[in-house]
Length: 111
Image 1: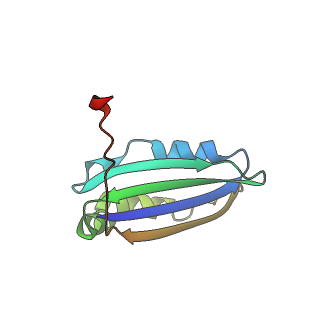
Image 2: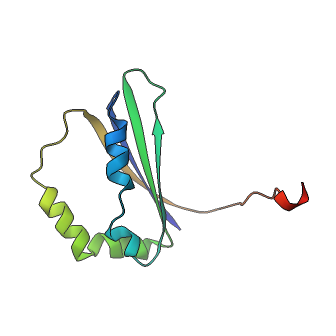
């Protein structure tokens, strides 16, 4: 499994705009090998808010297919000259190879 973590830090009061953008249905959902997308927010800092989008892929190959997808590439080309929002502080992307996943063992049926 491969996980992409995109972290977007914005000025306070603007996280909802980023969440809306990353929560919209899109072409990515049609890609073979996509497990899911999760969007999270940390508003615990008074000066900024952090939005984290976690995208889980079955494999690095599945992610590479997304990166080479013509619709994905066209979207980036179309947005290339867009002005960055004034509330954006920084954005980073990191990729992780998953080595271990351990599911919980709590048996809700045995309550």
